[in-house]
Image 1 (cartoon, rainbow, N blue to C red):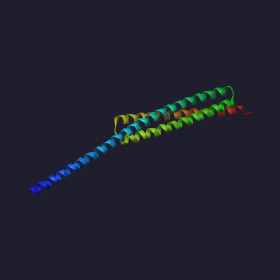
Image 2: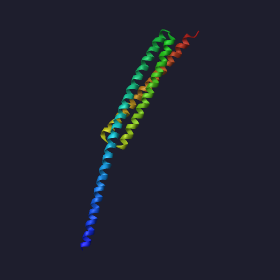
Image 3: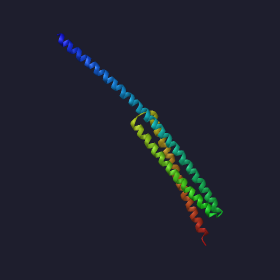
Length: 165
């Protein structure tokens, strides 16, 4: 009987040691998980911020394109072809910048969405939604910039046609 009690006692000690080791392991895993979540949260917020900034850049490039089109139109009215050509080139460059900014917004939005897939937290979902909205706005600004750039190019072509003898 004593031997049986000793065996039970040994088994209890072994189980208690195993449980303590499992708890320690859980604590380590939990700490790492918490750190990974914090890192993903920061990534999500940074990606959303990048998307918003890229959106602002696309919108500003679109505004610059619009101003270049105005300059090209003014130059065309005064038959200053070289100034119109420069304005069209600037409009084209601004449109390309808007496209790049929209692409950056899209990449940042994708990063935010990926982070949300890894962690289902309300703040991450909101940041991802904001990044997606910023991407939409950036794309719209890029489309507008390209349309205006094309308009400026068409204006320059017609101006060149009028000035041919």
